[in-house]
Image (cartoon, one colour):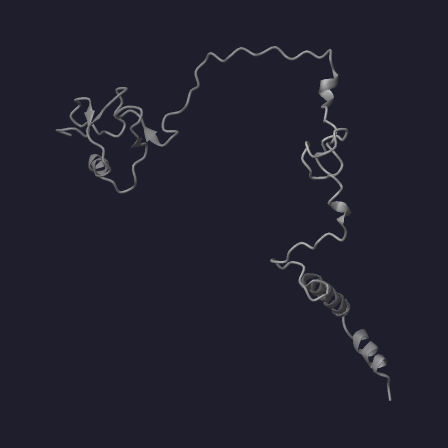
Length: 183
């Protein structure tokens, strides 16, 4: 009778290289899954490590309570420095450019005098109607045939045409008031 491991070896040799790699990887993946499960479950001591609700353990000895860490400055001894942590305060960080005493700062640049040019309609509003707080849409929604009725439905009344430009054609009678009487 043939030994079982000989039969298994013959069966594995009959497989392709890809299948043999898959067969070799299966035990590795299984072992890794078991290790991760043990770590997540808390190491087998009966209590999960990631479970909420467990309190902190009491200190093993009372020497930690007498160390002076966490006491207020007036409670600490007069000759002791004020500790800011377990090892004291870290030294201040000095930037390397601060160690160049001969370096002079650049002179300030003059303030810009030219105005900033912003293209019309950038904010989605056509400010040629009403005052600067009025926002008539730069582009009306598709399918709107009566723009004045659409504006009235949204609370707009008669709007003065400012700047002499009636891009949407809302001032049909040319009196300087868009969507007013007679338009």
